[in-house]
Image (spheres, rainbow, N blue to C red):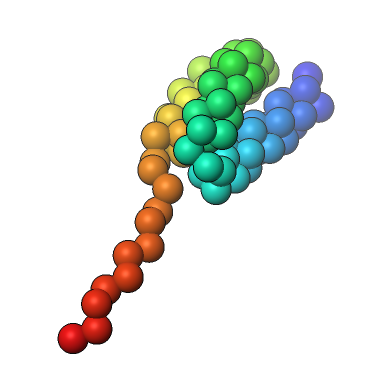
Length: 81
């Protein structure tokens, strides 16, 4: 059972990394990536909750939503005074 929990945590960390990298895509590609991340994230979250418990599931659900909702940072160039 312990190996399954470690594997589930590793898969969740990989999903979070992919979600962070999706912010660098173009807007049209980012929308597709968002739906793909949601479609793969729901079963992964269920597996994590099953192996590690509801507290871990709620924690990573919150973290995943925060990562997906954040908009990409835009750099603004200021005019020289």
